[in-house]
Length: 309
Image 1 (cartoon, rainbow, N blue to C red):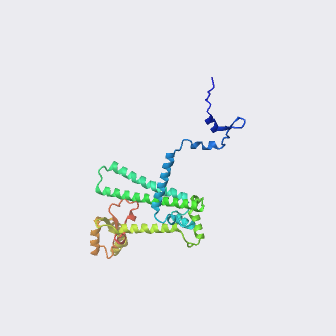
Image 2: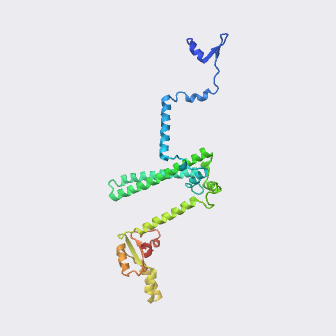
Image 3: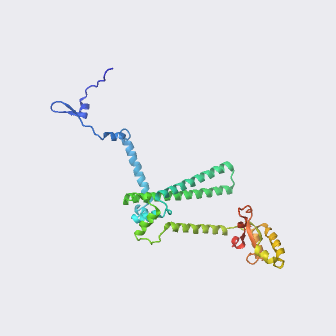
């Protein structure tokens, strides 16, 4: 087996070393850290670098356009305390920034997944959906899309505020910081009152909002809605007061089981206005037609004031 010989190339040899005054060839010293730059070889080109610069410039333009005139300082936060105040508004009690991102990320994904599953079910079980079904599907799509958009925007705001706290103010552990720790930092600045608690205020607002929705639902009953009624126990006791106690008890018990209907709310209102159910409808209790199979049947019966108002 022979050795491979290369032709002598002075230019190539001079690029790798030099000759001294006595004519000895001295190779150049190698860079001890050159091995760490091996990953650069062949991975980049001038065209790729130019395209990367263009993409970065485009992202910066889009970010500036989304923030609007005046820069993003006001939107992200004026200072350290302001950033923490805005960030605390997205957290729940006992929750860290990282946990909040996980919660909102799951919410955005679940809203999208629920929307997709509903569309699949419509295709499988209802190949020719009615107009009402289509409208319900559109409403569900809108609700899911809205929830997903809100969750995604909150994730973006939390990320922007966290990055600002890390880059501008050196709060490197911001993702591990909890809601309670954030409250202590903000209260220490004396910019807010000592009872400042955005999570508590959010919970209270959500409760008020849910009550408003419930009241709206109750008040939106149509005259065509159907209900079943029966005589109230108090009215039956009053009517049977002239009977003997034993006879009255058995008679009242049988009457309490007797129901009437279903009747539309319009019909029931007309009878109540004629005094048939008493001045305030106190003689009867009602429940919506079709609610017989309620888990607790007695809870389905409500007074006239609870149903009609």
